[in-house]
Amino acid sequence: METPLLAGDLLAVLAARYAGLLNTWDGVAEPKFEENVRVLHLLARDVALMQRAMHQANRQKNEHEQKLENDEQKLKDELKQAALAPIWAAYQSEPLAKLFGGGEAGQKLADYVCAIRNGIAPPKIELLPEKEPAKKPPGQTQSKPVKPSEEV
Image 1 (tube, helix red, strand yellow):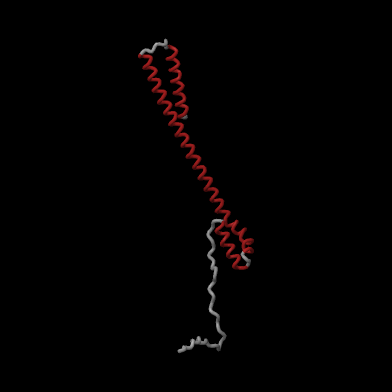
Image 2 (cartoon, helix red, strand yellow; image 1 turned 180 degrees about the vertical axis):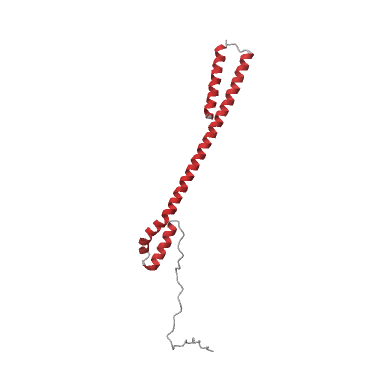
């Protein structure tokens, strides 16, 4: 049984009791009549409070269910985005590499930017590779630096 229907049914019963009481009332305010009206009034107030509490509980339940649905949809969207991210990153990488001047360095930068743009872990890249010292041809010795002369 739905609880809001219960409160509505109780209010209908109380309304019928009020109608019955007023139907038999001769217009004179007697203590017994006043007591019956007071009891019906208190009961009607209690039922109204109960009905208000049930409506509030129902509204909170609906809000909670809506939040759960929204959270579930958000999670689905995030999972979908995560699944598509590598595809979009690969798709966007080539044109971006051309903007970065092409070649291996342009492709590395494009892959890095596309990964970040699409929310995936960027590849580790070495932007400035270490240069090996130039090798001297055989038979050549290393020269010593010339010291400046001291003037007195």
